[in-house]
Amino acid sequence: MVEDPGAANFCFGLKKEMGKKNINSDIIAAGFSKKYLKIYNQSFKNFEDFEISNTYDFVICGTSENRNSKINNLFNQYLKKKVLTALIIDAPTCLNERLECFEDLPDYFFVFDKESQKSLEEMAINKEKIINLLNPKFEWILKNKNKLKNKNKDKNKIKKIIFCSELSSGLNKNIFLKNKKYSMNGFSNSK
View 1 (spheres, rainbow, N blue to C red):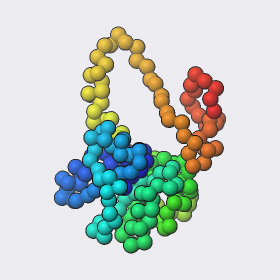
View 2: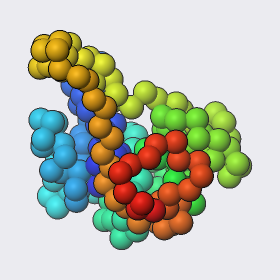
View 3: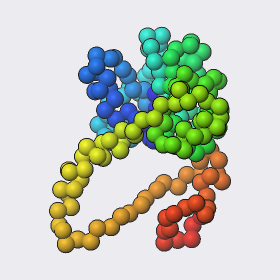
View 4: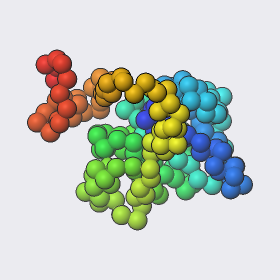
């Protein structure tokens, strides 16, 4: 279940891979993740059309900066039913705030960076409950790198690297302000 586009990255190719292993699965999407998944031709069920079911053996939810996410409420219902659960931690920022949305802790945490793992361990989460994954969006980029390379065949062009980011106030605004740990500089004096 996803609402946040960052967590939706973990859904890339998931249904297809599960199908190869004869595992039935559903992706439930709400909010911005629906548009995001559509862009990449990923199938999903609309949250608005979804009814809670006891038929799931394992329920995975992506965390979100949206404290009022309806996905969080649905996940809490599965936590109460004692279904096997996991949370996708797609960013190391604001972990406490992200976890406050849930009435209980899940059985597992899926992370893709060492900072998230370290933060969870500092919160006294058992290491065995933290599972490191490669972000499927990164896998998609690696798989399609040749297609991406062929789009820019002109070797006389100067290669440039452009870093683009969406401004976010996040759950804890201070974490999203520029500080001395930043190693990249832009053209503005924006903080």
